[in-house]
Amino acid sequence: MRLTLAQLRKLSMPYHTTEELDLSLDLQDFEDIRSVDTVKIDYVIHERGLDTYLVTFSFEVNLVMQCAITLQDVPYKISAHAEEIFTTDDQIEDAFIITEQTLDTKEAVLTNILMNKPMTVAAEGVSFESDEDESNDESDGINPAFAKLKDLL
Image: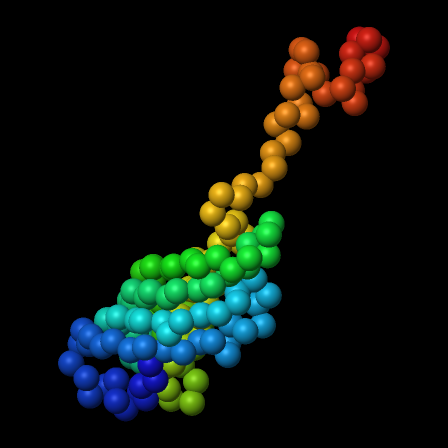
C-alpha cells in the first residue's frame, strides 16, 4: 500500500483497507523459499501525531520452502498480525521512515514475513536426528571427556 501524506491527511481515521501484494521478486533470493503466492493483507491506519501513523495489519501468505533434510518442496502457510509505526520523524526508534512524502508498507510486510518464516522446515514424515542417544553411556552424569578430571579431586 502506498499513500502520500496528502492522501493520508484527507482520510478519516481509523482508515481500513485491504490489498494483495506480489512479493515473489523480493523473496526470490532466499534459497530456502522456492515460491510465494500473493500476500493478502488487511490494514487499519491510525493517526498518532503529525505525520506519524500506526499501521496494524494482518496478512496471509502461502510459501513453498525447501526441506532442510530431503530438499523436497514443503508448503508452509503464514498467518500473522503486526503493528508498525510510520513517521517522517527520524528520531523515533523502531519506526519505518516515510520517504518522498509516501507511506509504503511493502518493506514492513516483507520484514514481518521473514520474521514469521521458520529457519528450517522438514517434509512430512521426516525428522531431524537427535544427539540424545550419544549421551546415554554416561553412568553418573559426567561428560566422558572430563571423567579423568574427577580423579584429580
